[in-house]
Amino acid sequence: MDSEIFLNERIDVLAKFGTGLNPCVPIKFRRANGREVAITDIGLRHPTMQGKRAVHVFDVTDGSSDYRIELDCERLTWMLTRMGDAI
Amino acid sequence: MNHEVGCAMREDYNKDVPLIMHIDLNSCFATVEQQARVMLRNKPVAVVNRRTDQTMIVTASYEAKAAGVKLGTKLKDARKLCPGLIGVESDPAKYRYVYHKLLDIMNDYSAHVTMKSIDEGVIDFTQAPQAIVDRGLESIGIEIKQRLRDEIGIAMRCNVGIATNRFLAKMAASLHKPDGLDIITHENLREVFGTLTLQDLTGIAERNAHRLESVGIMTPLQFLDADARVLHDMVFGGIVGEQWHQRLRGWEVDDVATTVKRVGRQYVLDDFNLSFDEILQRLHHLCESVGGRMRKQGLSARGIYVGTRTFGMKGDKRRNYWHASYVSMSPFFSDKTIYSLARHLFVQAPPNIRDINVHVYLLQDHEPSQASLFADQIARERSVVDAIDELNDRYGEHTIHSADTLRTSPFVKTKIPFGSTRYL
Image (cartoon, rainbow over the protein chains, first blue to last red):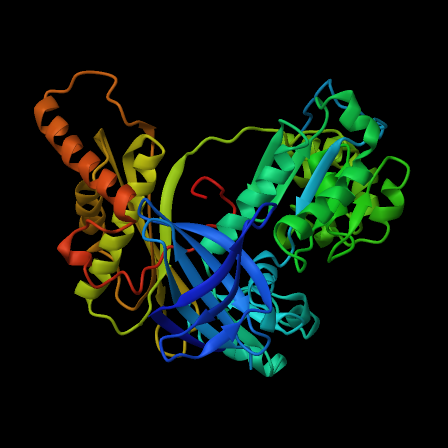
């Protein structure tokens, strides 16, 4: 399997909310250890339901690794849930 | 044998304007993974259902297919063919999202959209407004391809096939993968068939090919030229032969609505050394899943089927099949009853179990149509089941379940059902 790490880490996210097909665009996030990750590309954004709670899942990259960050629409919190390198 | 072939048989090719469009997201899951995870793009990717080397490949990306990786190959064998192959565990939520986006896009063009599976669908333009038809289906196909890229992502590609019936439209969609757009009409039908083999035709696999070859039909062109009576009497032995005769000529015979006849799940054991009690727990989990799916469709069942495949003796690679079924006088709907019946059948299963399969059939409306002697008892059971379903809807699948299945969730995960869009 590819190297994928599953996490459940609360993160700070700078995101732009606008109009159009992609109204929410995360720009960068800061991890619990203080490291900042600048997002260079959003691969896919898809909503999922955790019970009746909507969570928007963003698969993003900083150009060297892929990350999955999730926006909980009820609690308005961002979590980093996965990171992986395609080796 | 002297059957009269149906009087509605048409010997000529369908010369109507092609108004059926088939859209196919080839290598769908792998393409979606490559769309989501930018680092996977242009790399050989295999989507699997479990994170083990023994698991079978569900979908391979075009880069992996180019290296000879095929669906159904074990991941460890595929890695021998393609050393850089990246195994990715399937993520059904992502595929469901793409499915719904594709469905939304298709619905913008016609009210007659049928999704054939999670990655392919058909748009029937025969009743579409003239303005849409006047645009030409080719330009609509190109627009749909562009919208997929704009609305989902730039890595998304699809094949579009246009023809006068569903069969030829699907064939057209498979001519130039990936990202093809082809039209089959009565004018190029023979030319297209001339480039194909029998097994390239949708619905003609090994057994049907043997049937055709046994009467001297070796190519799609010979199949096309075959007499309807030969197909009816000598090849398919019935109306299926006539349907093939019409289908190949571009006449529609596949526009048939299907109904739910059975609800079931199959599971390959995560470990072949499990104790019988542990296997029963997994069976229990499957029964809960089947019960939930059945009730979501507003149905209850009267029949239950349990089957297994078992390993043969040491050195004997043949797999043995075992199954048992039971039909109840009265309908059942609760997970408890489904498991109780399934367990009763399953205890007769032979050892060395490889996989388990449980499904319910003889489905009927969940609401009782007539009063029962046990109405009070059934009403109580229904209240409990409804309350559990409501909680599971609110807080997520498998929130409330039997204590027996407490440890099975990491193993018996819900995966994407191929061939059915009922649960998407």
